[in-house]
Image (cartoon, rainbow, N blue to C red; front, side):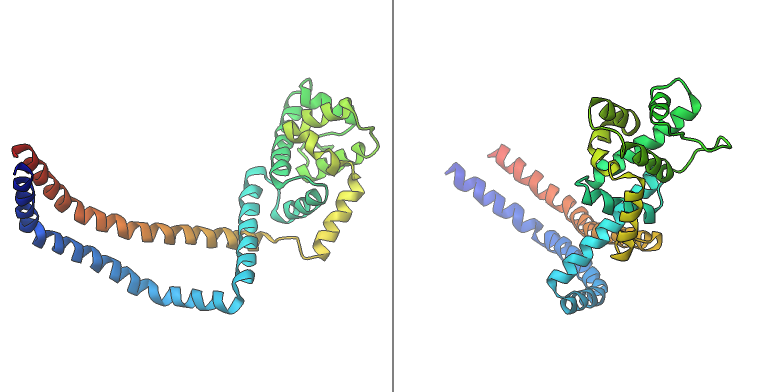
Length: 256
């Protein structure tokens, strides 16, 4: 009997708030419909373009866009132009060195160059001296990391692999130094040859293309938040009504 009384009371509560709930749902549906109408034309155009390209081709292009985006952001982080970085990435891939290992190594190289220039007695400075490479030019200005890396590769080419070589690599390139040795062993001329080969294959990415890829992916992220915002607003509109109904249900349960 008590259970029947509770169920009856809940029916009364829900019935009393049905109109308010329907109003809230209609409001939320209106927001979703409005967004869908505004977005529909653009979505249809994008879908038509993707369909024309074919699923596999569309995925390949999106993968390239993601790589360009990553190149753009990494270029900003480590201070290497996108064109040079994409050529280095090609050379690194041929040496079974990941892009992550390459970018971490170059970032540490930049830090080691600054440290060597500022403190001639530092570990980094000693490592550069051991190789016969200078982080600065004749005017005392820092060289580019690309130039220094090529000079280091020229020295590594003639060094025997072993603990000493690995120690120097890690002193200059950090933990990624050991991983970069196969790339550096190709020598200065080897790096230039692989950069030229990357250009021949069209694998060198321009700064403009990388920046456009970054902007495109940023816009996709913005669109994702626009969709999320519609549901946030819809939920915000419904929550006061749902809370009111649930409060009354709790009161009915307590009183019964």
